Length: 433
Length: 161
Picture (cartoon, chains in turn purple, green):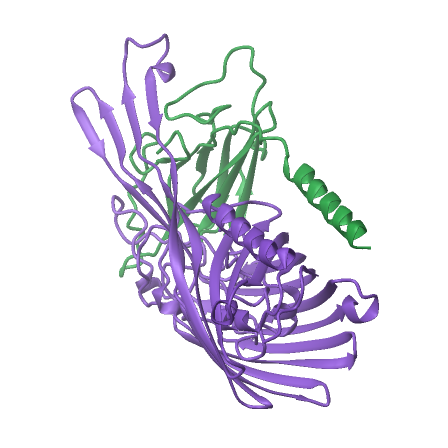
């Protein structure tokens, strides 16, 4: 009894310590191995500690305290070439580490139906990267540039209303940076012009919260339904930028904007298990039209909202072994790039494979290991510039000056390969529903 | 068994922590490009020399012009080009601080300057020599010649803004 009470309290303590530490979740491509192997089609099937973001209602399926540790490594290739020129490639290795905990609460049955969960993700390369280019025409991928480069965290609650209905809600945290800066000049301060310049910096990291919630129902023995919504996640960096020189004061505040993820509404269903197999389908509406540039400006024309379609299969091949596979079609949100911006991206197909071994059934060890491999392959994007939409690069010269980095047109492609694992450690005893 | 797993997880966490604690990056230099003229008429076809000057680059990030100290090693410079086909004029080489280039000018010429200081810090600046479409009468609307000190020869980079 003591273990049953102490363990969930310990998890709750970890949750609140982690939140207080300002850790953050929801990093792109940082899903758990099971979710990645299902190509994200995890809104309807039973959930676990690794699928809280996809549908927090799945927390209601957690029957015992569990700790999930995961890691993944990926290779990203982005190709870009202007028409009539040799193309160039940017390649990057992206890795990261994930942690999630979920537990039912101790106590009477009404309280034991409540589950708590947190998830953290830490990129191997950078804890946070917000890059705002001075040129708006720099070729950038809104899907791959920046989004994998942030630490993230979420906290969630799930509640099981009997066997048929589960609901859940949570918040994803995104960091914001307040950066008031003052630059002043004092000719008598020191010897040398450069040393007479004084720069006063103030930096404060604040957290903003993006809510998400979901429902999962099992109206029939072999049918599950799920719906989940999560708000868009952004980070901002801003503050006054005052420059004082004698009696002259210039205040040009900055407002940098990093669009991490669009708001998503997902709905899906799962069939099974039937002969050990469960098939899930999912449609996700992503509100990419809310995308804003690094300078916090809306785009004209705006990005398109997209409807992603995907499915996943879980098959209990052996009592201790599950095989998984998934597919997702991700339409590109990027409209034809005929104007001043050069956003890279095209329709993408995601294919994934994975497996899960439950060592409780193999060695009686309280462990489960999931592995996955997935690839995301994009079609080739092609863009032709319209000189009339490019504007004038230099107002002080007569005529129209064209300096766009995508002129006269360009093509791009992308591929992403990832492998990863999640190790689940079961702690305490299973709580019977 | 469980204790062994706990130890293994602890060791992995320790290894991650050690790997994650890297050296801070070296201080970055300032890369500054001054280009004149800043635009060429479409079809210039290597007729005009563009003067590219990196002499305002500095061994450290700075808000004002900061030439290197006398005993400081020189900056390592490297020019690279994309976009329009280009040629080096005279004796210019891509590691000089001061070069002359010409371009076919059928499209913009994108000039990148890479600057490395003695500490190994690296900065890059990008400047595009734009193209100006010809007027309705087929003439080049740009003034000729362009003064090297004119506002259209803006420097691009941290110290040039």
